[in-house]
Amino acid sequence: MPTSKLKPLVGLDIGSHTIKLVEILHSKKGRVLQNFGMIHTPPGAVAEGAIKDEEAVVSAIKSLYKNLKVRNINVAISLSGYSVISKKITLGKMDEPALEKAIQEEAEKYIPYDINEVNLDFEVLDSGRETQGEGGEGEAGRQDQMEVLLVAAKTEVIDEYIDLIQAAGLNPGVLDADIFALQNAVEISLAKPRTCYAIVNIGAAELEINVISRGISTFSRDSSFGGSQLTEAISKKFNIDLPEAEKIKLGGAALSNQKREDLAKVVEQQVSVWVKEIKRALDFVSSTRTGDPIEKIIVSGGAFKMPGLQKYLEMETGIPVDPLNPFRNLVIDYKRFDPDYLDDIAPQAGVAVGLSLRSIDDK
Image 1 (cartoon, rainbow, N blue to C red):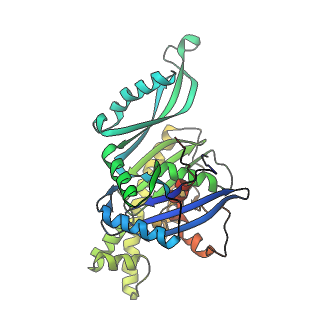
Image 2 (cartoon, rainbow, N blue to C red):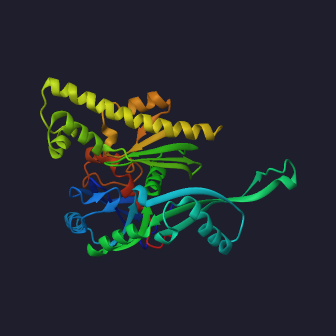
């Protein structure tokens, strides 16, 4: 896990619904939670992973920094949505200069954008495994191969985020992807190591699925599902505006018995859609990876709190489901942090915690 005692970063998760900040200090005691807080993202200011209103987001970030009295201006941020793409590919074993050239050529096969409009990065996952070739058994039928994780992000979106952070008076130290930040958070929170597990993140406007096997991402998928869909469904059902619908969704409004029944039906319908999407993805993974079953599903994101989601997902997939608690193995001063609040908000804090584990000299 990449961390640095000398050059720590503040994890800043800029979502379409909230902006979350986590600061972790590395000491002899372990990873110490120094700061945590969140603020609502101005409506419409961030959509589908893109910055729509820089001035409003900058103002929110400055308020968050001021309220939490954070001094470290070096931050780690992440991208999500269709602006960032990750793909695991298999190549013949080669040295780094040849690999960099091959990555450029291979990327054009997988990236649905002009290759000149994206920034590419890669990481070698397995630098040399022997696989059975088509030539049959024996040495002639074997070849050395390497597995490489290819990551591409639209340059335009990267520039938007860098400009945003600099406009807030901060220094962008690391630019990550949500799914990898979440993986970092999950890995430090697991009570015991898992051979294969799935991370399901249900945010305000996105459903992300990442299957991890032996520490390596083997499958990932993004879908346009999220908590905002439920807000819209409630708004339509009760003929009210979105802010009032959000209040009802979060349990902050008094309802008659009939309206509670109507709300339960709306929630059940939406949860069913999410669960079916998750099950389809995991069924696909299971069908292509025999002998490596998914042992656990770890769910993150604010929508995890929807009634019946955990039970329904366990029933449909036959796999145990747990909420993410990225604070579990951190050193926490409970005189400063309310334990009940941290437990309640934990599933939403994964990306910010994962980002705060990075250091400014990371790749």
